[in-house]
Length: 198
Ligand code: 5GP
Image 1: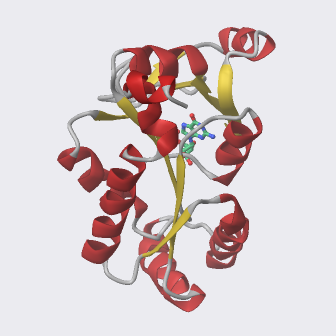
Image 2 (image 1 turned 180 degrees about the vertical axis):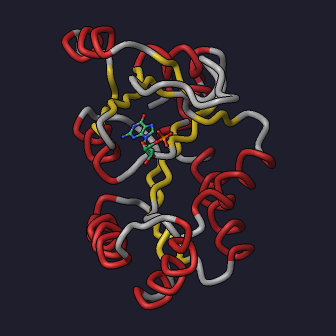
């Protein structure tokens, strides 16, 4: 099962993702490829697979990415082979990717459940961003414009989780994932006798 969770920065997405992973031992967080340098404490294969620009370009040419992006002068991409390798071991994958990544994954026909975390109001998000942004110099208006741009893509998602209460939002995300486990798309492969009587 592929679970895609997006949401603008400041919406509380990381907290929800952390809870989902803690409570579902069979779901792993996607590890993508990047051309950026590892930060202290980061380990190759755990946070990211760290590769050179040349290697990244080769993977692009060979169409090896489910989705890829150029962020702050670095490249990031989700390898389809990695995804399939994890799936072949019977594990599920949670993708913490933005709207662009989701758009590409959908264009490539990826199955999965697509969840967008939404703030209760734009004003609420503005307040959360203002609180978070104190330590970096980014302009609040730019961050809010980026967030609004992400939210504009709500029509691409199967589920919208309004985070007006983080416990409630987490519960909703967990329920959506549980329900998706029983979706026809997910389960039919595991019921061969039922497939035969189609
Ligand atoms: P960082 O370098 O701080 O780990 O990540 C920078 C940005 O790249 C974040 O906004 C993160 O969401 C995005 N990012 C990381 N991995 C991927 C990926 O595989 N695909 C896409 N589309 N974005 C990614």
